[in-house]
Length: 288
Image 1 (cartoon, rainbow, N blue to C red):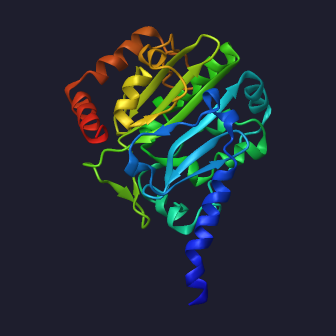
Image 2: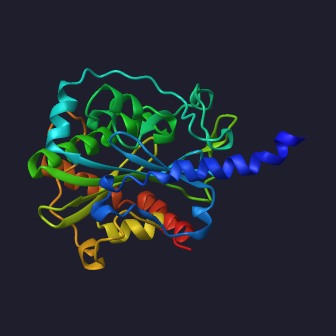
């Protein structure tokens, strides 16, 4: 009984320690992304890693956002780092906030990185990207197709500009309550990646439907905020988030450059009735 009485105190101490290092270098203008829904902020913990920060939610047992300052220098180190890593529990989190390997096993979904291992400078940083606190369920069709293309396009952007700030996360539709595993890990309706280019003073976002027939769209950060109720760059003026920067087209695979007709085809697919219905449902469900 003595130990039970102390558990709330120990949990509060954990929250303090986990939040103590706010890792401002990962964020545009040193300010972390803002979760705009009061309910969504309940039961969250911000964690800092070598090359990215993450906000973990007890409700989803996964990231609400994952943020990084991606530089050309870090990518050069990443290019020289042999790809390796295995997914593992984030033991910094209390048990109630942890996804498990069993949740994903035979689920029919990939373990989708938010901050990708290919961005990470060095073995330690790369291994940290495999923490389940940085992972959400993604369809294989998205994770191994257009999502890899988004990641590749963003790395090309960082190499060109020298430095960009990236925030990546899931978007959930409360009316589509699909979950996986005994931990009931919710499956996102979309995954997104927002970018701030300080050299060009521009922003933009990629948003992808997490379906068996995924499509992706380039959109404004302002629209993304409406969709997911998270502001990835709260320190930036609204006028900057209303405008879409000149963003690289989405690549279907990391190896092949996307042609403009293919990019236009993605936009036409996004404009289909099915995709528009999903988009409207997200806006209605998430902007409350």
